[in-house]
Image (cartoon, rainbow, N blue to C red; front, top):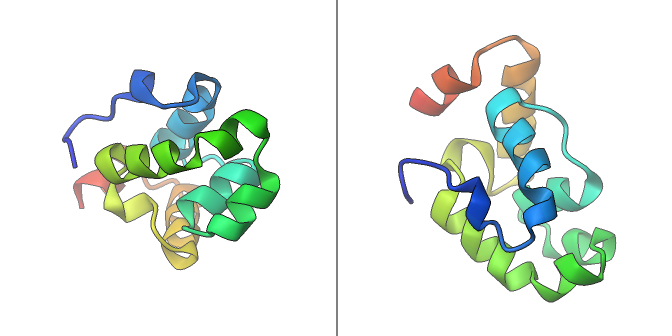
Length: 97
């Protein structure tokens, strides 16, 4: 994983803003991103639009390359990330921990 998150390289550029809000501010993502970050491929496929569905494999690869392991990979990890953010723990602190 790279040390910096390159949001401009997201395979579906329209997702960049929402991904940034999730990672940096702990904002609840939409159903597609929630499923993607939780590694729920069936759910991601079900909630994806045509573009996201066709680029799902690339999106998974992007997550593997750029997303901090502390905020994606399983539903419990995602829920802990959101809970940490809800408790006003700064994202930078969570990323550094």
